[in-house]
Amino acid sequence: MEERFDCIVVGGGIAGLSAAMVLARANKRFLLIERGEFCGAKNVSGGVLWGSDLERLVPGYSTDADAGFERFVGHRRLTFLDDQSSFSLDFKSGHFHETPFSGVIVLRARFDEWLATKVQEAIDASSVADESFLATNVLVDRVIQEDGRVTGIQAGEEQFFADCVILAEGVNNLLTRQVGLQPDYVPADHVAVGVKEVIGLDRTVVEERFQLDGLAGMTNEFVGYATAGVEGGGFLYTNRESVSIGLVLGMKDLREKRVKPYDILNDFKSHPAVADTLRGGEVLEYSAHVVSTGDMGSMPKQLYGDGVLVVGEAGHLLMNSGRAIQGMDYAMRSGILAAETVVEAAADVDFSSSSLRRYEQALEASFVMKDLKGFQDAVHLLHDPIMYEKMPAVLCDFGRSFFTVESEPTEKAIKSFRKAAKKHLTTWELVRLSAKAAKSL
Ligand SMILES: Cc1cc2nc3c(=O)[nH]c(=O)nc-3n(C[C@H](O)[C@H](O)[C@H](O)COP(=O)(O)OP(=O)(O)OC[C@H]3O[C@@H](n4cnc5c(N)ncnc54)[C@H](O)[C@@H]3O)c2cc1C
Image (cartoon, rainbow, N blue to C red):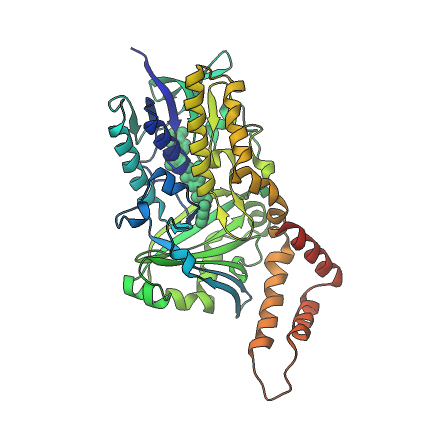
């Protein structure tokens, strides 16, 4: 007998699991397929999950000591590096301690697996508990289409059919390409490589070294020397008993400069501002993953078709505007909106692309597309060598002058800043940067 579901979700990352939670709560019969041994097994993320959608999916998670996050964001720092100095913007505030938290630091293997258990609980509580499944260790090979309409998926010899398929397969979106929504060619300057190490430290060492109170954690992003002249940035996030440290590096620039991400990461780790924080730590894990840059030029031409919806990074929904990397919160919101669309389409018994278009409209009205569109200039600004090469040098030179006290008459700050800017930037670059920054940030 043909296996038929209301919906099939391909991918058990954050986007897929968020969609699954909404489907389970709406008593829909669905099949979620994840190729990893368990949800999260294949996933890499720095990472901070921003926003309050997690509270919508798992109400009260912040007071659950066993919830899947490592720490909540209680302290943020943005650091500009040259070869020996660091200049930081640092922000710590009591408001970060209010629940729901504005961001939680996660290790994906643990977080996704925990979220999957919450989805399973929602399935068990639904009226179709025996008819919805989370299937792991299964690779979806292809999407089945009949007369241009998506009707199911094939995994090995097995075929499964549904009214709608949600593609939540992440950035290597082979199935999204297969159904013709994404062109085969994504320019190399629209994708980056993320490399990350998890470095183990005793819990007390993490808390004392980073001055953390309870489950509060720190996020630190880095610009400048961290990437050795390659477009991109670095990050360090505190977990319960480890720190995640890594880089996101532009693919095209890496190729052109013929440098290896791992060598750059090692140099970054030995910078005086970073080495001190890692002292005595042991590398527990190393991972690498492709990541979108947030340039909308890499997005599929549309995120819906007859019988199909594309969510999360499969749709290149990610943004790095300089304030934070936002990929997981976009994955979560898009997964929720796609599943809500499926529920509405089921009520109308219409899964045509004109009915599923509602998903794109809901996404347009949400913070995801509003921010992606509103901050494209900022995304492009971060790709400008002035930002990742010259600005850090200006700020570190200024910092050296501002924070050094000598037995000489002290220079006014504005004069020190002008001197530092003049040393590294032409007047034209300074004007261009000020105009771009004012417009984009
Ligand atoms: C180094 C790094 C740091 C990052 N830091 C942050 C951060 O701090 N904050 C943030 O918000 N974002 C961050 N991101 C981005 C974030 O990780 C992604 O945007 C997010 O994981 C996207 O979620 P997703 O569910 O769409 O895709 P994924 O998390 O990639 O999940 C896709 C899932 O689909 C499965 N799959 C794929 N193909 C198939 C198939 N054919 N059959 C079955 N299963 C399949 C995969 O195994 C995977 O589990 C970072 C990314 C990297 C690489």
